[in-house]
Length: 146
Image (cartoon, rainbow, N blue to C red; front, top):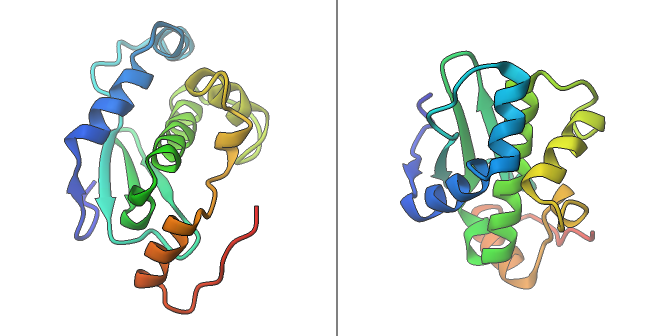
């Protein structure tokens, strides 16, 4: 997929690959769709996915791409959490897991990508640094309370 005005980030791709190719994650994906996965979802950075959207996943039969809002990059922990969250959405798609958008199947996948932090990774946090950066792209935005 071509994400308008986006760029690929190799450092974040390496982090994403380190999560996706962990034995527990990779074996789960392989066992649930019986296909050898050679590539993890590609990570792209765009100016913004929306005022309150830190990341989103784009999936179809040919590709799985993860798009991150540039404003989330000011906080490494939040960025990594968003990557784990979006990888979980990608796993739901690849394995055809049941449930709502953030329901049973998503929680199962999130526990794979983020075993110790899955509760925290359900949503990104609007830290002061993230909020200030978000205001640059969305001047009318308000601080989100978690």
